Length: 294
Image (cartoon, rainbow, N blue to C red; front, side, top):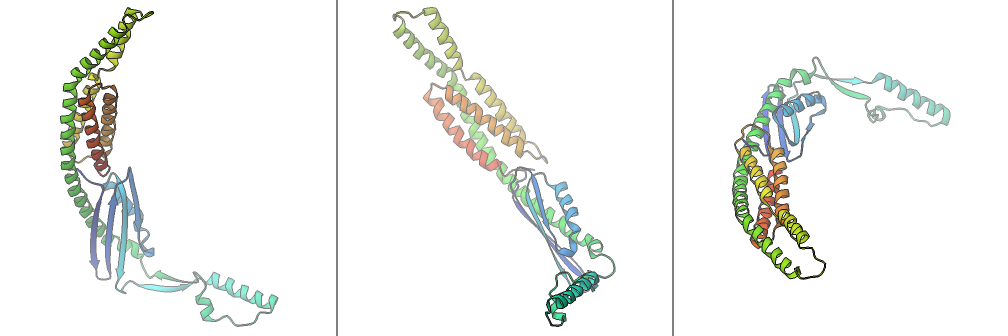
């Protein structure tokens, strides 16, 4: 199955004390670029979640977010950073003595001190004990994302098949006109040679030699052969299942464009030039679509 790099997945699992929802969104990217976001108490989940994504996906920019709802049954205690409290009170006393600034330190003052009061889990670390819930939710989300990317990938595959079929038709027409192209170029050279034949200082042998070299340069047989080979390679990719083929397809598109461009530059035939332009237009559509295939 072909896979798009665009998709969405959601997984949701519950236990008596917690509900975990995992959302995943992905878009196209040259490589696999994974970003995860978990609540502060569950940051330990992030490396595991990134590992799960890397095991399942090959390319794409992927954003995974975790939402945790607790039902108040997870034990927690409030702890005071006593070292910080002592330092704060000592400094307040020194300010009072040195500068004569009066006033008592109140609880309200202390509540404004960053990180003085900390909420910590009571008993076992909830990130460890509740990981199985998050893992199940993540697997559900990844499964939904894979289905989404697969459905979109198969749709893109059919669109690309139609474009490649049109490219193959145009390539065949270019090949069929290649003989006419060479004959047309030869006729033009013969006319030019006849016109220059009587000019002083023109070496007939050298003139024929240069004409032969130029005619050979206008031969697009090799370009047609390579074009057919690249299109056959694209056809093989349509038959591959379960592989990441986007990069290989993109490479072949570049090679096809190169051969079309060379053939168009060599062409002395209006029919070939017209078909090369049409093929480049079709190829640009393929290039846009293939950017989203994994």
